[in-house]
Image (cartoon, rainbow, N blue to C red):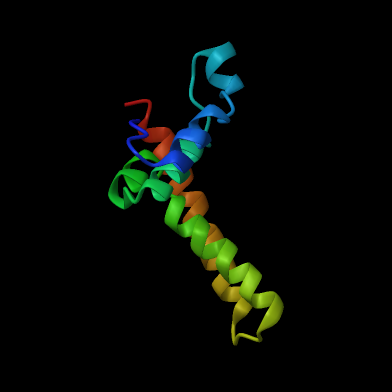
Length: 101
């Protein structure tokens, strides 16, 4: 990833945690790519962020909805949060499995 001229992205790259699963076992974990995807979002590379970690946008929607649900009342909030969670888990597992092919 090229940090380019964005100082925030450059500073994020300096503090990224290594994947211990990848270092010790040589296999990426289901969360591999999340930190780099967030850094790409800060750089404005929205399509690249999705390619890096496809669940990034459903995760953002889920967290945003869960925070908003604390302050506002939504009809069917439980169904919405479960749907977002299921979609996020599906994307994470699908991305993880596709890395093996």
